[in-house]
Amino acid sequence: QVQLVESGGGLVQAGDSLRLSCAASGRTLSSYHMGWFRQAPGKEREFVALITSGGTTYYPDFVKGRFTASRDSAKNTVFLQMNNLKPEDTAVYYCAAKVSGASAYDYWGQGTQVTVSS
Image 1 (cartoon, one colour):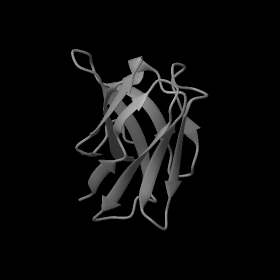
Image 2 (tube, rainbow, N blue to C red):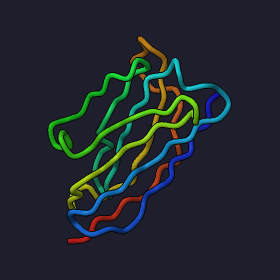
Image 3 (cartoon, rainbow, N blue to C red):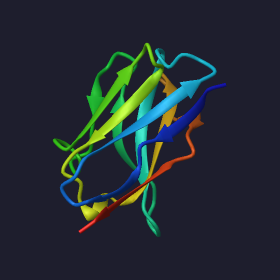
């Protein structure tokens, strides 16, 4: 079992930055691909970043150039650096873990709220 705990959310103004953390316990994350997702009120959950076990990253166009995923193996933690935040980035952000080759994520965190005011 892997337990994931997100932190770092908060209320910021448009143009500000936040860094979200996703700390894991139970197992090392080194063999897991780590995804970041978000869900705004009344909307479906959407993918915002993936960092593979090897460190390759993927982003959808609407965050590319603004969001950066990274991982620190020593801390068993992954991060999501979010720059130039926009009001439409307001959502609950979740991290999730899946093993390489899996289509679905096996473990999810509880989420952290990010609110961006205009």
